[in-house]
Length: 194
Image 1 (tube, rainbow, N blue to C red):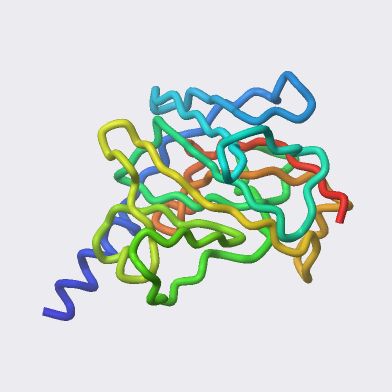
Image 2: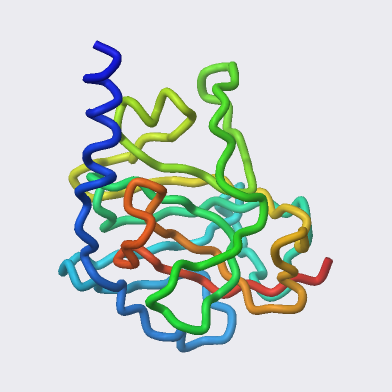
């Protein structure tokens, strides 16, 4: 039984065929609150940044550690998990964004009261039951590929990247189950003051 469970998790990772690139164009305005891209797979993906209380706006040109915002997305492929994180913008869009601040999402299960919102440096969205055992959140609606993520800006520099020195953005990208597939890479540029 254990081997069957391992095979159910490992085989899809090993047999995944990349779907292409996201084809996101450089955002038109300097500090947008949303981004859209139509990937090589034909899906139109959209992400938006919202204030926590859903009133007012988030100033993506002047973020500080500890700032919080909500990210919503739609059009994503729920057959693949995604990470939502603040990462360095690569020079070549065919390469994986990163390094990312705060690393990969924490995969330790934490007991919280139902309905409690947990903010983190990164969020992991994956509907597969096996990955949800390791802390992934579900898509809000599988049919539309809709999700919600709760981001708390981590320290803007660590041993891997300094987002005060290099261009960084809020990114969605495929999780480790399709790490070399760029089709779900969509980003909103960010600037940090702290």
